[in-house]
Length: 275
Image (cartoon, rainbow, N blue to C red; front, side, top):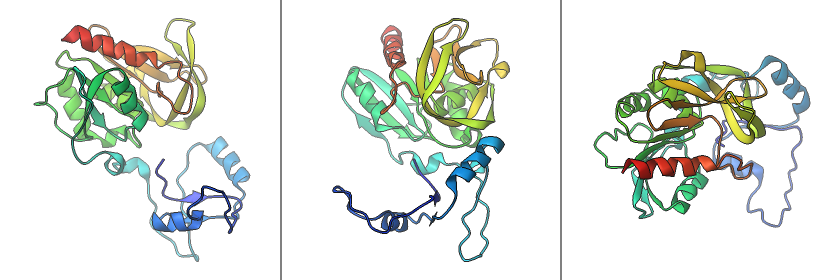
């Protein structure tokens, strides 16, 4: 998690954890992150609960500062790799678009016997050789990732398997002509229930996102796959004839539920069929 400010109710100026190497204050200063304590965080939580996600500032010594709106910033630039990195030497090659990928996702693919080619979020992979395409999780407004969307729009004209997670799910939907929107209440936590569309088969998933796919905007070639049981928002889509699918949740959650990690196996099966 990358933060731009920290708000806490109480702060201890002495730290004594046996594994500690520096204070929270020193860590924040090292990363140039402002912090504030003495705030009634419970009252603040109630406000956010009622009004939804809000913009805010930490004002120091009464000096105002410019309002930062993360919804208008390419946050993926700060978390994506800046170079091409290859992992493993398996026979199946997965090209991974890194929008802020978690290490555990890379581990999952390596455990499945694949090799992973990790590329920057805006990399044009049209001339790369690979068996399948993976679009990772990441932060922020998906519409800010214009380069990724344009590259994906070309990729879906072909038939190589595509698997997207979280932000990758939203980017695949946008590349196919669909739309996304900002949720009033984002999905955060390891206990988000989802159900396979049109069935009674449910799973508990890990989620951390503030945007969702508008499944009504999908073209006739796509269909909704998973649905959030709490608010009935879209949690997954798949193409009706091509090996493309994506989910809003994190199948490989660590820590968290692994009810849906079978989706990696489904993707591997598609890779084997395509070669």
